[in-house]
Every structure is written in C-alpha cells, then in structure tokens.
Amino acid sequence: MDLELLAADWLAQDPDPVTRAELVALLDDPAALRDRFGAKLEFGTAGLRGELGAGPNRMNRVTVMRAAAGLAAVLGPGKLVVVGYDARHNSDVFARDTAAVLTGAGLRVALMGDRYPTPVLAFAVRHLAADAGVMVTASHNPPRDNGYKVYWGDGTQIVAPVDGEISRAINAVGRVDELPLGDEWVTLGQGAIVQPYLDAVTSLPLGDARELRVAYTPLHGVGGSTLAAAFMAAGFKSPMIVGAQHRPDPDFPTVAFPNPEEPGAMDLALELASAPAVQADIVIANDPDADRCAVGARLPDGRFRMLTGDEVGGLLGEHVLRNSSGPDRLVATTIVSSSLLGRIAEAYGVPCTETLTGFKWIMKAGAGLIYGYEEALGYSVGSDAGLPVHDKDGVSAALTIGAIAAQARKDGRTLLDLLDDQARTYGLHATAQLSVRVEDLSLITRAMDGLRENPPAELGGRKVESAEDLALGANGLPPTDGLRYRLAGGARVVVRPSGTEPKLKCYLEVVLPVAGDVAATRAQAAEDLDALKRDLSEVLGL
Image 1 (spheres, rainbow, N blue to C red):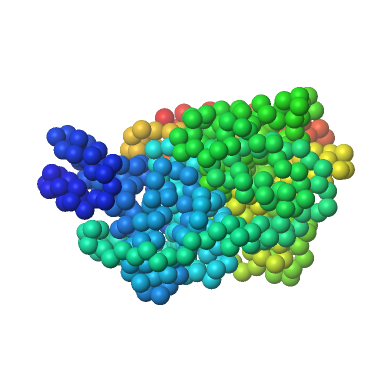
Image 2 (image 1 turned 30 degrees about the vertical axis):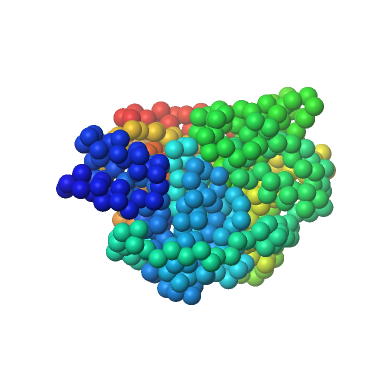
C-alpha cells in the first residue's frame, strides 16, 4: 500500500481546504497516514460515524459525497430523499454536499432549512412519502465526531440487506470531483415539516393535567426550540432551560461527554431544577440530536434522582397500554433492557417482543407496534393510531413523561410514587450497567473471548443457570456479538461491545418481590447489583 499515492489522490479530489491543509501537514508522518488511509469507515446499519478529518478513515466531505453517491446508485433517479442535519461541526456542509450529489444523480431532495432533531427527520420521511432520508449527526458522541444515518421509506433506520447494498455501491464510486452535482433541491421551512411533527406528537394521549414545573437542557444540541414548542402546543408552560446549554454548540463546552448518562452531564440541569426560584417537579434532558430523553424526579428532601432508562421505559409503557385499546397491539424492547415491560404487557393482555439492541431492530418487531424502548434512554411513544416517529424520539418521550408527571402532581403524587406502585404490582425490576471504556479495542475482543472460553459458574452469589452466546443467534434473533447469563432468582446479565463507542457494556438486572417496604427492597436490590458488578469486574479483568 503506497500511502503517499493514496494521499495524493485524496488531495486532488478533496473539495475542502481545511482537510487538504491537514493532510498536507501529515505527508511526512507515515503513522498518521496509515491511521487515515490504512482503513476506512465502514457503512453499516448505523450508517457512518467517526472522527472528523482527512482520509477514508475519517468523516469529511469526500467520505460523505461517496456515501451520497452510493445511496443514489441504490435508489435510482427520480426518488425523493429528505436530508436533515444537526449542529455538529460540518453537519450543514455535509447535508448540502449530500443534496448536491443526489440531485446531480437525478434524484429529488428535500433539505431541512435549519438544524433540527433527528426524530423530525425520521418523521419527515413518512410524512413526505419519501423513499429515503439522511440525517447528518453523531448523536451523543464526542465533539470531534460526526456521522451519517440513513432511513428507508418506512421511516426506520436501514438494516440488512439494504446496508450491504449501499456499502457495495459506495465502494464502486470513483473520484468525487468527477461526480455530477446539482443544486435544484427543495428547502423545507419550519411550517412544512416541524409544524406537522408537532401536530403529530401533541395528538398522543396526554391527559388534561398541565400544572408542572420542568427544568430542561438540550445539552448544547438542537432539541431546545422543538421541545419547548411541543410543550407549549400541548398546553404546558415552556420548560425552564439551562441558559449555558441552550444554544447549539458543537464543542459542548460545559460537559465532558454530551450524553445525559455520563457523570456530570446533568449537573447544570439539576442545579437549575433545585434553585429556589425554580423548584422544578421534574428535570428533563435531551442528547444533542434529541432522539434520547433523560428524566429526573424530585425527592421529598428537595434533591433529585435521575431515573434509569428502564424506569422511564416502564412508566411510558404502562401509560401507552393504559391509554390504548386496539385488538392487535404490540410493544417491544431489547435483550439488554429490563424484563419489566414484558410483565406490564402481560397484565394488559398485550404481547411484548424482545429484539436486538438498537431502534433499527425495535421498529422491525412486528405489526401493531404502539410502543418501543431501549434502556439507553430511547423511546418511541404511540397510540392506537400507531407511532408518530418510527425511531426513538426524545421530544415526544419528554412530552409524554411530562403528562404523566402532571397527572401525578394533580393526584398529589410523583413519578417516584408511580415507580413504587409498579414495584408492588410487578415486582421490583432493578437494573444497572457496568461500562468499561478502552483505548485499545483488542481488550474488548480479549475479554469476550475469555468469557466464551471460561464462562462463570456464579456471579454475585447467584448460580449461573444458563449461558447463551448471542453470536450463534438466540430465540430467533439475528446473531450479534454478546453473551447472556440467566442467574438464580430471576437475575440476568448481558455482556456486549458497544456498537457506537469503544466500550464493553454489561447490563445487569435483579427482580425482587416487594412484600413490605419498597425502600428496603430497593436497598437489597442495590446490594445485589453491586455484588454482580464486583464479580463481573473481576471476571472481565478490565
């Protein structure tokens, strides 16, 4: 492999002066060239995602134009593609490059006229009867990253075999400076797509209680104005927004990682919620592209407790089931989420399907899907009329949890009281995560190989009753890199590499009956989860 020739070819076709200058400065650095040209970002079911910079192993204008040309080749001339983008570095540039390549190839393009949340793009695909959609975003990745997510005509993220077809078409693309470029696309204003989206999410079953104090942060992302508009359109007061995190900022200056699950990310929102002049009932956060939603509830002493994704998932799931009545309803969650939704669905006489991790799989769960969630703060809330968005949607989830909290407040209760009700009814389903971030991805491979070669016989003082290698497929699911252990007493552990970050993630659940005091049962569950974490950490050796 002649790295210098590859770099020279790249320089000759790169339309971006910034990445050209970056690459020129690296021509005498073989290690840097090998990093950028020795591999390439692979297009898969999550599209593309990676660090910004020059070369095929980075996100840049050449990579994006090649992806757009591959998509155009698979779709064919005359098809309609909606293109959206968030506020990350170069998102708007990548979106316009995509529009230019697609229109140059004879396709029709509707380009979002501003930076909008990912669920607005997913909604737009179906609303405009488009054949596909492209969202330029890296969701909650670090500031140096960007990404390219593709939706198909049903408004869901692509899965096999479409992802493979697009990947092969990308590989067949020649030089991007020889691609025909067009400029005759339609620009979508707020009235054309945001208003229909707001109409759809505010038509969800939201009850009539509206007294609620909400503290909110978009974490420097694009969710702020859309979420505030949704709350006001539904009859709520506008949430009180963290000033320092209100405006979109691709550098995310106030957080180490722009993910509400990360330590410290919610500090400013919790500070606002606790301020004497605010005294919020709940605190809500979206991630930067607003497809995820985090929720915190006020404790009796005035402090706040962040709810887990599984806790919010259970509250939203029961709300949807209680407020729907269709004969062919279906709910879905993932193999790493709590088993609580299955217990709730059983009580309502509704089937619950288990899928692989990711909303691309949840949305394929089956006909009649009215609700789906994953523990990583992703929810799609629907009704008997179906799902407004065929992907996770942090705005409609926030609006619905706000309606639940407002009704609880009207009844003199809180979200925490509702969680206690569920624990008494269905058993306490307590979940936790053990997540290990690594610099060297081979460590994750080594840990997974070690577990396969020497599976644990006991974890957290509980006998391992069964072990499933998810790479072989389980219960009819497609193969995926992961291991699932079922433990004595209804506990469960799933270990899998993250699909979007350099992490090994372990998902833990214990299920305990509540015979008396819920608080005491929660304390016991916390001890059990800590014991599982300790044993897993030792077994993994990371």
